Image (tube, rainbow, N blue to C red; front, side, top):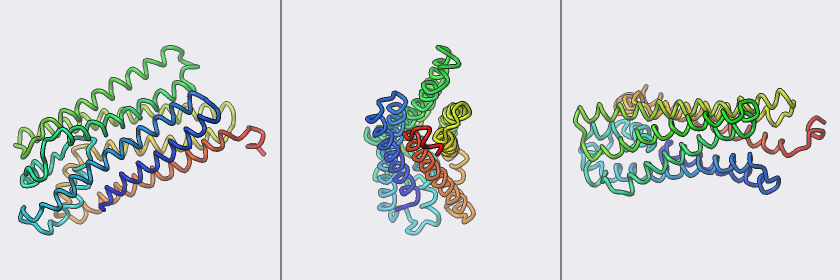
Length: 299
């Protein structure tokens, strides 16, 4: 198993755990905040699960058929795959543009299943982020902005649809080896999808902002833990959008022959793992403390 597969599996597991905790709180207290939070975590979990299935399937096919390409032990190919096969941006761009053999029918078939998984994984990710933005409206922003707060939600939806559209456009254009003009267009689409995903990730900073304001008003530690937890989650999501940019396509290419590029890829995944792990721990603690009466918490 590549570290990218492990990372996607861990992310799916982490968000599933947070979803279970949140839905348990919903059944206990029946608050709309918890159902929104639980659905957001569930969508993020399913997104990374779909990404894992797509990612693993493509890696297995490439590794099975690589003997036919003339490089039995391609240096750094695994590291290139770790970045270029992340489905949130669409099918591989660098590998299909530069290693045409990897786009052979045995490895890449433009079937509905592949396109379906690419679209589903990205759509679930975007839906989860939009729900997090909506959560900030429910818990705080609506009180200070009134109906104008829903303009924020509308902006998030538009940004999300643009990001999804860029990914779908990339997915539909990659049907085999890419020419220079096609690769340039694909990279432009990847950048568009990444920039809009980054913008949507930045909008999720409204969640820790809302929790911080609640903490300032009430002094409850549960809000402080969730402030830091959601802040790290937003940082992780921003880091993920960076991984999806064309900058990492170049890094994937360099990794085939460069140990320093391979080390950079390892650092990317280690950073993502730490951010997601610490975030999940803080969010879990915060949600559990949220159920403790204020008097007991202070004691």
